[in-house]
Image 1 (cartoon, rainbow, N blue to C red):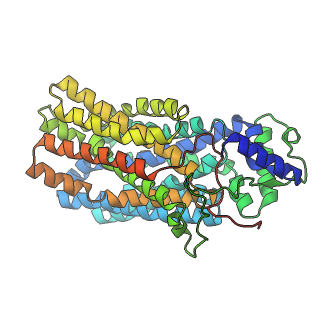
Image 2: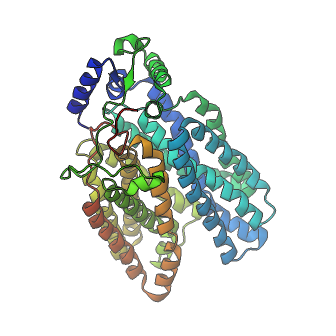
Image 3: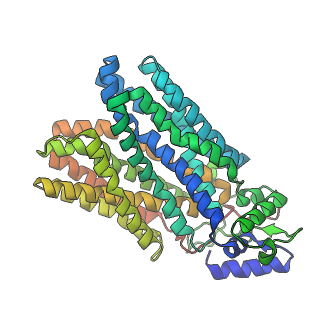
Length: 482
């Protein structure tokens, strides 16, 4: 919602003896509370990235330690991904129904305990079982962390804060590479798993400092608790609560609760609430956004497989000497930071939709450049460019998803979209293996390029809601006062 609309709604609410939460958050502004929140949520986001990446470093160790073949090794990432998909759906849904804060704390505790426990696995199947639980936990982190973080942000400055949050993902990937590089050659893979759980362990002690989302509290009729959270935020930002209208007995309201998430050309109200809450994501006013978001995440995951997991193999196929696992992973990870900075610069100036449409086209073009590149310098440059473009897209996705979906579905939508994207990408390794066996290397890379380009066209047809400078929406339908 434009700021002017928020102010008019806020003024109307004030006249009825209530304060608009959006205006209160804007008056409080960004300060110490928000930067502490960024650090706590960011560390959790980095910890999830570490858990996602570490599997790549286990393959060589487990192949040697337990004498596993490729089929047995392939079971591990499939099992972990299954746990993550189930965690994203389960914890996201639960966070929308029962609150963000306790899910925020419990999921990271699951990751720490099971992550350390996995270091004592006695075989591949016990390792898979324990890492399934790890995936189930960090799936909840992915679904809930950004949703909770976004709901504390004022409209002005929210974009930069969300982009900053997204930057913690490649930070986590970089830490995973560094830990692997130092620990595995000296102490082995078991100590490596313990060390990778330590960042999550740090957040166990930090997360109780973060209160419940005031948006979720208001949406669930807990006005007194929401008021106290906002008063605490103001004090931590060196603002007297009374200066922003947060006096004893003040009444907060979600002034935009009648705003509809629908096409600008459509004036039709959204469909009423259905019994299964997740089905609301496919109601009349939300289905295009939901489907477009799923396509976006699936396309980014597909492109990411080409630019990270399979990139060392592509380089070797194109005649380059095989890079070490650590060097290639570090190179790919460092290339992601310029993508985030570029996304933040453009996304906070021209809006979210334009860069989202362009992001997949850029991925397609960069992969096409890589397919045609000859010579080591050009191959490395185009490889880094592709990795940068993919991270540009992920940065936009991490901002757009929590902004476009309403509070009552924000965590559930993040979990479901991420899970659907993961499921759609489940066959990517098999498709890639078949293509490599039956086609030339350039043809395989061009296939990835074509899929990315077509995805950009699909996103243009589906995604239609611009979220820059718009207040976060709270409900997906018109309803009366609770």
